[in-house]
Length: 78
Image (cartoon, rainbow, N blue to C red; front, side, top):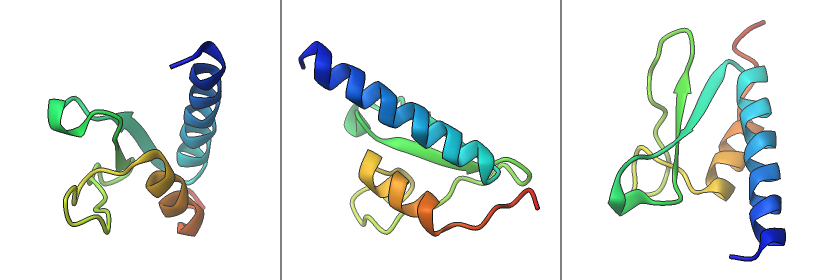
């Protein structure tokens, strides 16, 4: 991965983190070898892991899936 791609990925991850926090969620990278490059979304108040629509990875999201999931969510903090 080039430095430009790495910087772009880090910027997208920061935007994802900001969007998640604004809506009452926390995003973290998975720690499973089988799920490298995937993210877990957890609701802060209830600490429940959100499920994705991906059959192969029901409780983790690709970056694109996580962005789309958060775009559909309303703010939990209001």
